[in-house]
Length: 382
Figure (spheres, rainbow, N blue to C red):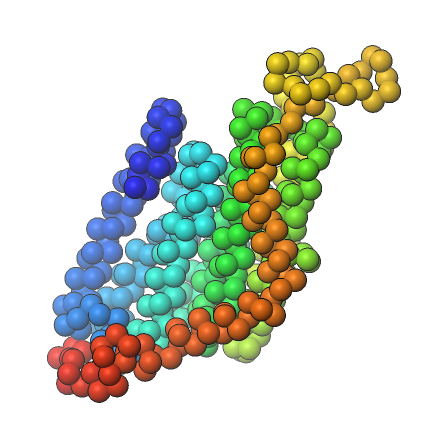
């Protein structure tokens, strides 16, 4: 279904993007199947409950699962196998991009979290490799987001950086709580920004910063919602971004050691670079005069024409329909609600973390009892 969704409008550009998306995902799925075959060959099972803790005991199982994790990291968009994401996602419609950013990449991240917590048992030794990949992804995505001239291209690179932050919070800590909180925040925030800029793109027929210039003067409700979503992405109150960043930093500091300090520094530096990218996005899309290619005269799309007191200067106003603001506005409201009501959300996050790290309960639930592991073999051992 994702192959059809990414090219469903039928334009030549989106068909080309769909071809890239299909090729990358088919190759990645092949790699994933190869990894699953390696796991079965080395462990005699591909059931995660049977494989619980196996990566610590048998290096062959760990290496085989490393191939599986590599394939999942490609699907999530981690460096150095990330290039397809910022090329493919902005090439499709804003609605599909929002759906994919919230679900498609996050499904791969959830699979990484489940495998990492169950089979690798959050092993710090293996975690160093994952952490290096995560930190490079965090910085690379943040730096690259400062260059594009398209709003959704900037957001796509911020998605790559967010994937790195989630993986870093997972790899550095002894519990995946920070990764879960930041993933929830990132799903909501990127979804809000993509749908809001998609609404402007639908009306103004351009996703470039120059083609959206001056939105603050013409589309004030849209601009206010974008302010809230940008604040969330950067990590400013009163949004879920602050909670997400604090949870990641707390997880890194709780781990201690040099790697914990490095993780905190990288996340803070990436946040600062992300702020610069968002300021550039804000300046290009919100300030300035009429969009490039706009004559300044009223046209049939304009709902009204407003003057600023000078008869020689008339500024046209084109309204983004309220119905197009509802999806992004609702997600922005969720981000604020997560900040204000985090006390109610935190117990559910703790419950999710407990379900991930309590391997014994997971094995008992899947295999049917605490003694079920004795009936299985891992790597030929009883």
